[in-house]
Length: 103
Image 1 (cartoon, rainbow, N blue to C red):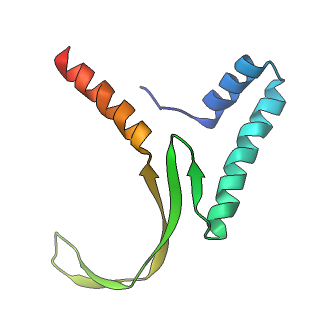
Image 2: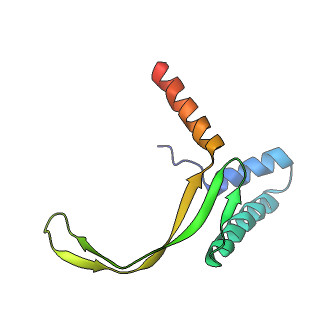
């Protein structure tokens, strides 16, 4: 089963590419994610060139409905993280999807 890209995978990649110790590579990856998290906690937008932007969005309280029981409930207001991919990332993904459909 493919679990996708993990912190460990990224850390190993940095270790191999930069030739630094595994501990330094792990700390480097942790620092990046910590920085992104702190900026989002401050409600700052995080833009990574050629990749996309992370942003904070506040959702208002609303009425929701359980699809099975049709029972209505109040969904409380909350803050969510959104991600908007860059045009470059979208094009890369669509290029790969289109190439796979042809094959």
